[in-house]
Length: 341
Image (cartoon, rainbow, N blue to C red; front, side, top):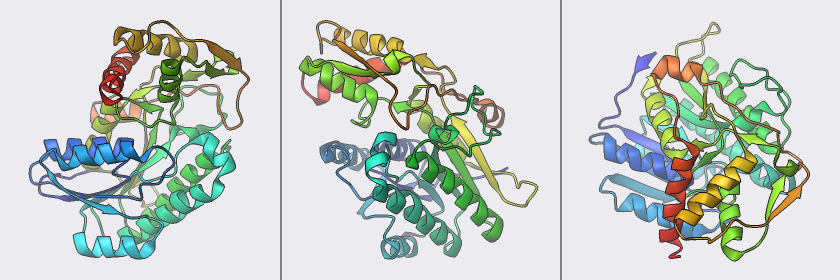
């Protein structure tokens, strides 16, 4: 592994108005001297854009060198001109059309952003060489794998959603470009990221909105599901550590590696809901637990996710460890302030 200093570097963060992208950009500017963050985001209306505006406002007011470009990575001309103008040293690709269920009814959005957009990123890194490309994959690539915890050595050839298939494709594209063009790239399989200012399409956020309105919350597979919930600060700590080390070359000569970033502690969906309700009650957002509507498993869903993070621990001396109650308490405090409850 080659060490990379982030001081005085220019970092391109795609999806900078997104949940992970905004928190990463903030951490970079607050931590590394002289760093310049160039953010690009297409600000789609997949969820409430006012939340994206709020994140951008946070970035513009945190005192770092931040430049924002509203644009789509699927538009090659936009991306090429950005690389030519800013000449980034490191690229972190977090732009993607997210969501498993949404991909079932809206496949075009996933092909455009996750496939064409990522291909454009790789082409730009090929023609405008960077020190390191770090890109988001997803725990969804593990599909219906029965073996747990999920290891990056496991076969991932059975995606159960188009979203998962696009993320697996990103890993294959990146490996080919590393091998052919000498790019150094690291892919990160994120496990159910949550926290303040998060995505409203995620379960914890949707549950909260319904509990506040007194509406029943829908719990799939009758609550018999497990997720490796990973707090946003842990995700960002993992990304920043990984940005600073390029992967060793593999036997085939590609400087390419995949890591899981997950809490390595799956929680049952019912425990998750009870903990969320407790945190919301502590903040006075709701006064009592809500009604539950138990439903069967949904298409594209998996029974459990569980990250093996031994590689991450070995190479970086770090593993996510924020307790669910700590993370959800932080979310509840933010929710109360943001929605002025």
